Length: 97
Image (cartoon, rainbow, N blue to C red; front, side, top):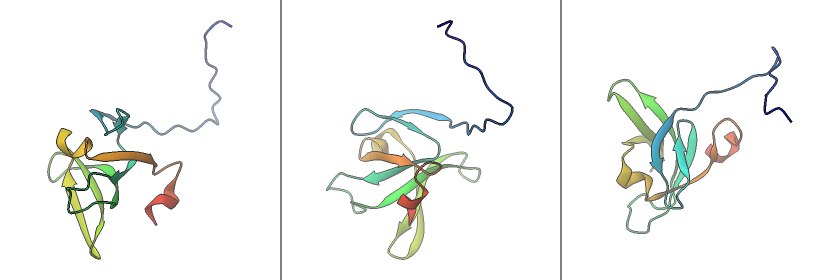
């Protein structure tokens, strides 16, 4: 093998920005990833959200639902290590339902 990758004009790609953060298992966190809050000390334990860029706060947020209201939390190192990446919104959109 030459190590070259052939890309067809019909191939589709979604570029996911790295956060340079890791979840509780050491898994890298990317824009579009779906996270589950997995630390019992959190008031949102078990909640699921996805990462998106928010222009209003000028950074990445975890967006989801909590108590029937939309919520978001700014994505920080402390929040990332309380969560677990369970997929991404492009390959596993059913996780957000």
